[in-house]
Amino acid sequence: MTEPTPDLRAEAEKGLATAQVTLGRHYATGTGVPRDGAEALLWWRRAAELGSQEAQYLLGHCASVGEFGPRDPAQALAWFRKAADHGSTEAQLQLVRIFEEGDGVPPDFAQALAWMRRAAENGDERTQLRLAHLYEDGDRIPRDLTEAVRWYRIAADWGSRRAQFVTAFNLKNGIGLAKDEGEAAQRFRAASDAGDPLATYYLGVCYLRGLGMPLDEGAAQELFLLSAHGGCSAAQVILDIQNPWGEHYTGGDAPGSAAWYRRAALWGDPEAQFHLGYSHHHGLCFDEDERIPQDQAEAYVWIALAAENGARFAADHKDLVARHLSAEEVERAHERLHLVKEEILALRRLL
Image (cartoon, rainbow, N blue to C red; front, side, top):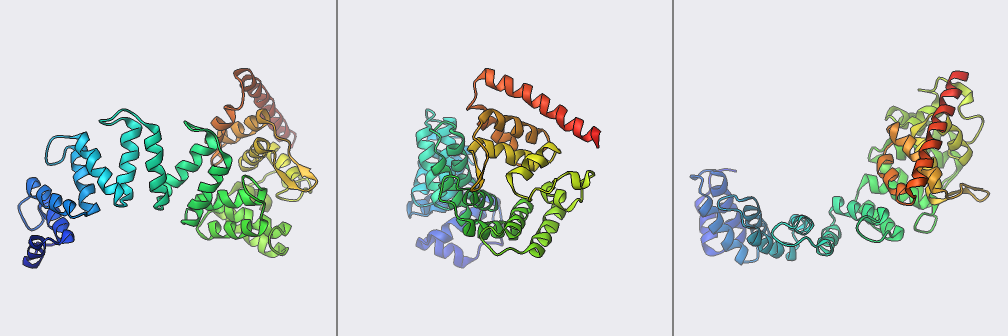
C-alpha cells in the first residue's frame, strides 16, 4: 500500500465508501501517514454507515480483539451482524464463533448453525464440510445421512477436492443418493485431476471394472501407477510396489471387489482396512450378488485398525461408529481387534 493520494482523500471526503475504507487502512497501518487508530475507525465508521460490508467487518474485528480501543463483544456482535447481513462470509463465520463460544452472549448452537448455513450457502468450503460432518456424525444435531451427502455434494460443486472424492464414493455405492457409476467416475476424475491419489486409484478401479466407463486395463494400470507414486497404498499393493508378499496378496480376486478388500485388509493394507470397515458400517453392495452385511462392531474393528495404521479419515469415523455401540460392544470389539492383529502377524510370519 502506497501513500494516500490527494484524489483518494478527496473521494473519501465526498462520501465514496471504497475510498473511505482504503484511507482507513492507511491510518490503521501507518502507510504514508502517521499511524492513527482513531482516524482509521472514523473513516471505517463513515463507510460502514454507507453500507460497506468490508468496513462493518473491520469495525467488528477491532471491537472483537480490542484493537484501537477496549475489547467490546457487544459492538463486535452488532458490526459482524451488519456485515453478515450484507453478505460477508468472514463476518458470518465470526457469528458462528460468537454463538458457539458464547462470546458476550449466552451460547446458542441453533444460532451458530443458522449462520453456518449462511456461510456455506455463500460458498465457504470449510463450513460446507463442517455441516456435512455434523450431519454425518450426529454431533449436536440429529444424524441425517441424506443431509450430510447433500452438503458434501454442494462442497464438491464449489470445488472442494475432498468433498468431490466423498461424493464420488457415495455415488458409486449409492450412499444417501441414487447409485450413479457414470457420475461417480466423472467426480473421481475431477478429484484425481485436483491431485487426490486415492481418487486416482478409484478412477483406475472404474476403468478396470467398467464402472461408468468402458473397460480399459491399460488406462487402469497408468492410473494405479500415478496413484501409487502419490502414496496410495492400495495402488501400491496392486502394482507390488510396496508388497513383499507377491501373488499371495490378491489371491486372484478382482481389485475393488469385496473379496479383494477382505484379503487386502488381512494382509495389512490400511486403506483396504478402512474401506472394509466403512462398508460394514453402511452395509455396502459392491455388485448385485456381493453385499457386505451391515455390522457396526465389525466396522469398528477394521476402522480402528485402519486408524492405527494411518488411513485417511479413519480416526474420525472410528468415533462415529463407536456411537452406535454400547460400552460392552466396544470392549468386545477391542478383543476382536486384538485377534485380527494376531491373525495379520501370523500371516506375515507364515510368508
